[in-house]
Image (cartoon, rainbow, N blue to C red; front, side, top):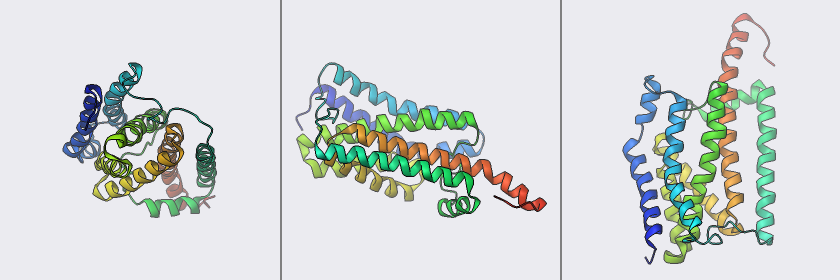
Length: 246
């Protein structure tokens, strides 16, 4: 591949993220469950892992070593971009409606608990401070950094060297492995999500849409986890003392 020195550094940085994720695996989860690490500390470490290569990319953008158009940062008012913006608005609207239903309907919460199981309960925020770090910190960082790195660079820039289809699958696979801390089953699930986000990026040619959708998904997940964890104890108490649950 005929990449510039800075692009090679960025590519190796992303590879480092993947290797670190494999090496770390479930160590972070074990540390949390054993009380050797707080959730906020885990959120901060994950943010640092994402922002380190992101700073390399920003430097390349600053010195114009990477084309902002290839990254999907320019608005051309095409039909695809308008469809992408509309799709992002629909996703956010659905999440707002879902959160409202979840906060007011115990039956809906029980359905969510059954569907989710305990796959991510260990990392979900349970206090307001944890919620702020998860949503405004981790989720927003993931939406920005992961989309710039995995979609903007690995697809937008790398596709010029190896083709769109190859870069799409490489991006999705790397994205999935970087979520190994959630377990191997979720690696496949996250890779599929990465594939869909990649297709959205290719269709719209606008990274901001993909960033918005990704961040919305993560913020939504954190709010759902917070609501379920905060209401579980109250619902159990109401059942024990015989009070009806709304």
